Length: 87
Picture 1: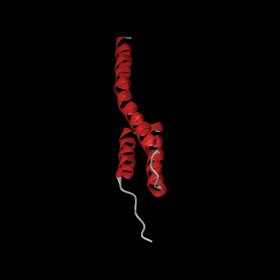
Picture 2 (picture 1 turned 30 degrees about the vertical axis):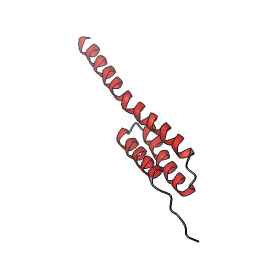
Picture 3 (picture 1 turned 120 degrees about the horizontal axis):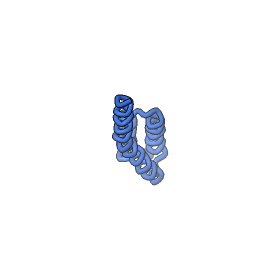
């Protein structure tokens, strides 16, 4: 009984430690989504939204590393200057 209680406590504490990382990723996704809505270049916005979709999928699968990678890629896509076309 004592081992079972100890195991339950360890599992509960481990779960609490993982929550802040996913909360950070989710907050970064929301911030990047709001920044993407302000972008006027369609290609740049589509690229960022593609990475944000992948980040949301990774978040749903509880893959913190992939989520963070796609959020970073989305943020990088939002910071790049749109391609200028010459007439």
